[in-house]
Image 1 (tube, rainbow, N blue to C red):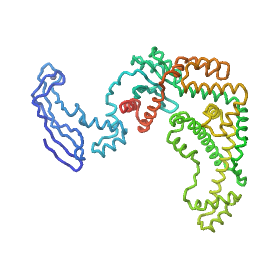
Image 2 (tube, rainbow, N blue to C red):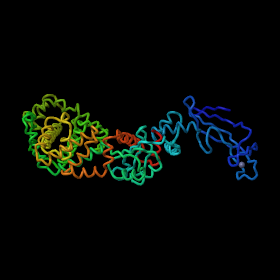
Image 3 (cartoon, rainbow, N blue to C red):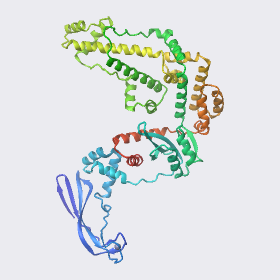
Image 4 (cartoon, rainbow, N blue to C red):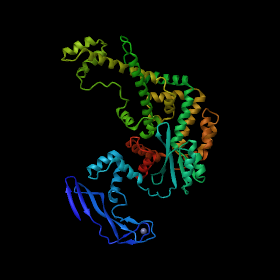
Length: 517
Ligand SMILES: [Zn+2]
């Protein structure tokens, strides 16, 4: 054995010493060396240096005349044939690839003196064999967006072990049925309320108990309630008017109306509209958050990504589209400008002269910009007050079922006002509240009575959908299992998918999700 050291690489030259080698085709031992060749294998680093093994490997002649192989190369314990790295290096590089993905993994590996290309890391992941997981008994199914809104896959999670065990390329009943048939012994399947998973489970595991997910049940209820409230805009308006007109709302002062001096440009109007939409979305998020929904569920329900969601909740508002630059020269005089604004001064040149006297060195245009921002803010908060008078059907659906202690005074008055409205609406709201209680407190014995009562109201369609899926709905009120853990695993999957920058195929994604579990 011979060791040579270059600044960035250590090379170990080795010669195999075994007197004979076995023919891979017939198994006979041969001692007849045909020729030698050089094999170079990357190995684990040593002293911070990349290491290469340069092996003077041999070719042997097969001693068996009838064998199809005349000549074979000797097998080396360090690496499989044709590999350019040792088995132990491949294991570690694959771990890096699983944790970090191709290119970032490649960069880390280089720093660890185990250089490897991103493509090779991905190849190592693809080539890895999956140990079959222990046979699952209780599984959860949920879908995940492979291409948002266009293509979906299914994640199967072993709920007892909280481990993803399969990634299916679509959400078709047949696919789910085939997978379940290949995994006999599954006793319970928790799933959403869409028909495909129900049909697939019925076909593939007819004996299994199906559990409709409680969160999906409540979401379906919310959707049904929203559709009903959307048909009663005049009642929503009346209730909102009553809520805002109540005496305790009187101390909420309206900001001054926007100055009529300058017409609002189309661009500014568009910006205002965008801000209003963001504000409405934020109010929905805040209402859900107050109801105790987890951030991941809110993100799922609203389609907002979780990072943005967290930022909005931390800010307590959506970010405005034009933040004043903190510490800018004009901001140093903001106290003076605000006081003058409150006194009614809207003249930019006048204000510029005043702060110039106080030491301001900027242009009048900067003061004009400041005034413009100020006006926009006043307009949008006036608009948000106006919006309170007519909450959307969707928001109203949350407000009327939310726990009273989680609402502010105006919201509570709004819910109460609706409950003093037309009987048909009151019936529906009370049924919705009862359904939520029944689901959250798991009271299966109340289900039949509820379905009977709902049959003669506008919630009839929702009740019918429950009846069509009755066993699974009842199981949701009895069984502790739900698809929530699947949702957690889907977040993980999405993170892995993002790391892969959308370049990876389904097979590679599957390997990473299941291998790194
Ligand atoms: Zn042979």
